Amino acid sequence: MDRLSGDLDRGNVDGPVFDPSNVSLITIEEFLLRRSQDRLALPDRLFALEELDVHYDSNQRALWTFMTPKARPSFTPPMLAEFEQWQSLITHGFGPGLTPLDFLILGSRSPGVFCFGGDLQLFAELIRSRDRDGLVRYGNRCVEILDRNLRSLNLPMLTIGLVQGQALGGGFEALLSFDFIIAERGSSFGLPETMFGLFPGMGAHPLLSRKLGTAMAERLILSDETYSAEAMYELGIVHALAEPGEGVAAVRGFMAKSARRHAGFVAARKAMRVTAPVPMSEFYSIVEHWADAALQLSEKDLKLMLRLVSAQERLSKAS
Image 1 (cartoon, rainbow, N blue to C red):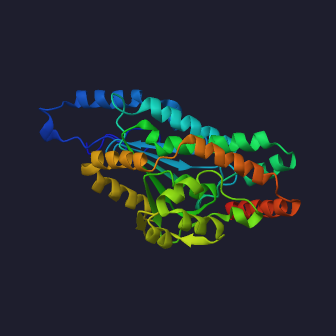
Image 2 (image 1 turned 90 degrees about the vertical axis):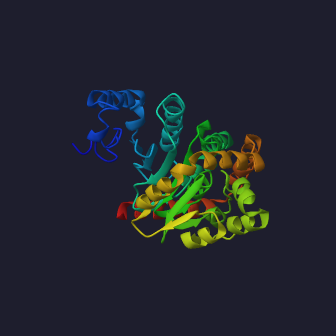
């Protein structure tokens, strides 16, 4: 018997290889009992989400999650609700005394796209109806999810963003909350909000300014340019590059190399959060400014926004 489970089977724990030479240390019955206890410890709902495909790999103590959007690969309200549930289930199902978790990985199943970011169609509807409260509620949900990820859900783990395509707008902002970003060559990053008279309001300003300084952050935010994975690596935003199609393998390799130094890495990330904290009041204040700016957009700006939505939809269907 080589293995007791498949690799990354949906909702299952990928167990270690059974070594008959260690039978004196652990019997087959004890091994199977531990496996069943691991399964029972994991919240079933975590593996039944509709727009997030979740797998647990006990060999590397890693939780893999891939976005599987039903519509455009954007942060729609249903997707945000799933992220909120995902974070809550992880917080209550993993950690000291529970199922061990050293790494949390987020990627996307959308071919060529990590995420296009905010729900532009919803933004246009809220702006046309002058619903400022709706814009603020949406933005606050985004930054609250971002903040929890910045803090690694208060668990002793490292978070990894896996990019295998375009990461634009809020998709790029979301990645900035991860401890490490691994991107395949050919992936691209950008903040296109200035194209239609707005600015990225869910994390780009506070996070990029702390990572790169205010001058470089402003250049990225206002440039309306798309940057390659290689350019982001040179800036220090991307931590490792992978060849096209090798992103998952690169993440596995990164985790294997990091396992021995895991405790030190976790402590270093905590120290960085002390050095460059982002209070929630700062996130909330920027969302308020973003909502006010959104309400100033003209009908011409909104039509451009909706043309971008159409382009995203065409790209999604083509993929």
